[in-house]
Image 1 (cartoon, rainbow, N blue to C red):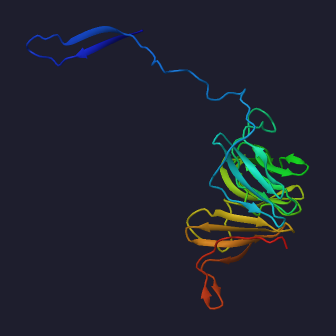
Image 2 (cartoon, helix red, strand yellow):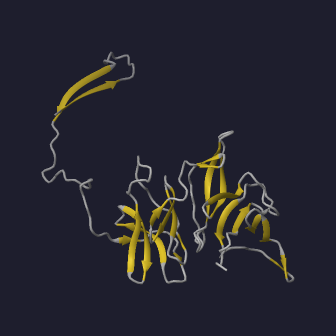
Image 3 (cartoon, helix red, strand yellow):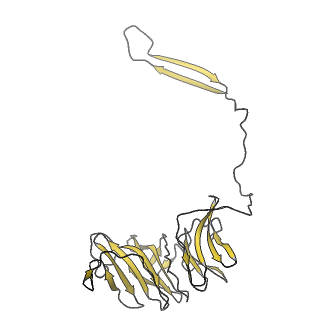
Length: 273
């Protein structure tokens, strides 16, 4: 039962109608006969099977016939799915505890796979996850220090971010401790040692424009050399970063090539050799 009190205010009039009317009434609220309270989900629910739903995501593959992709499980969770000749296998799923505790793993980013069957991907709030036949490791964790900088999330992996020797190239946000400014960067993890490749506060050789260069795609070869594509409002170009060497521009929009002009660059692919 609900008691309702209502005030009705009238405009001032010369015929002496009261300026306000106050009313009180009681309302009885009854549920519909067919209304029932029933649980939708709970921590005690355990499901042994899910229906895989489509998601807008890329697929990465290797020369061994394996491929990996992200999938939605009945719209309730997400997982990283690895296909092998023996069938499909979920190698990581949202809802699992984070490595340092305190929360759970949430949706994953684009995965990469090498010819050893190792799979690399980013997980929100975690950093990078590397799944190998020997188990799961976390090469780079969100919030950790990267030299004099603090990693600040938005980790991104490309299709060719992982070579056959386990070397990694990835994009991420970082925060300068000196002025607390957040920037975007590309980094290489070579034989376990981290190294900056490029940061958004640095100009790229031969790439002009009024906007900060935007990373579009990247990859790493067997020697740890990094290739990446970046663009500004004035165009885009492809770059190569060898270890401990200055960045080198390889090709860009507007370059001459055998009597013609290159108008577009897209679809970066990095071969292991």
